Image: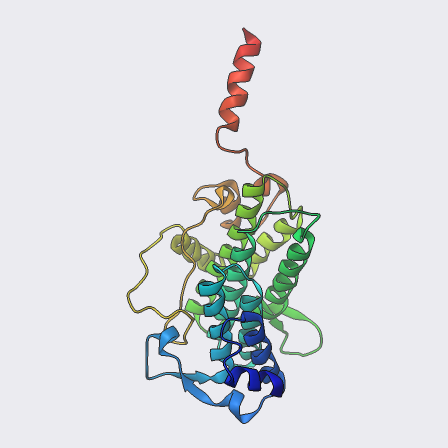
Amino acid sequence: RDMLWVLFDAGFLKRIPYALSELADCEGHMGTERGTELVEAPEYLSRTDVKVSMVEKLHWDSISVSRKEYRDGQMVPYCYAGHHALDLGRLGPEHHLVEAMRLYHEAARVVAGYSYDVKDEGKYLVDQLKVLMDNVKTDILMEQEESGGDKKRSRRWSRRDCSVATATWHLGFLDSILAWEERAQRDIFGTTKMDWAKLLKHFDLDVRKEAFDKVHSPSEARAGAPLVVLEDDLLYFRSTRSKRLAQGSSLSSALLRQKVTVGEGDVALPPMDGEVGSRSKKRARTRR
């Protein structure tokens, strides 16, 4: 940590997202006064009346550098920042849980832009997404029973808007992995994606309906909107890319039932554009 601060002060970490994330992670686990110092971050918040810890700003700096210098092609900054937001949300305000889910979605979005190659890093990327979704299940969508012990129940959100926002980013995570499969034309996740979709059962039906309304009703970005979730200014996932989460799709309908039930057919890989027409023409020629 001390070595990273020396390099940071010398300006050597300005273009290294992973190093910035490592420094933020070190401060998050073995904090110093410098890490907990409150600083302004108007470039991310579009406001000057809000201050954040230096740890948070380091995470945001890491993401910003990745976007500018590496064409937003790194998942690590989003994972680290998501873990930090999750730590804050476990005992703190609920909007941190929304931010954790949003950042995990961003990590999945980045991964969905990669070419899938099982001989290269395909399996590693899938494993990393599984780790993220385990965090979502155990620490965002569920909470400990009041009686204590290891038993958990669906989270009882104190703020409805936080539950709706989290549900949209959960749908965004699903959208990214489904779009990745569709682009690769490969069943990358098998039945795992069914399990991840079924996790929407932890939201009440009315929350799921509102989340789908937002997801299927894209709106233009607000001028001056923050780049991160704030307690009084939430962000929502908008506009799906996957055919399987399109409005009226089999999977969307399954997730909007009172009791969430997802079958293999709901998540089956759809044919490529033009493939259905080609098959129909082939059958027609055969009949002649």
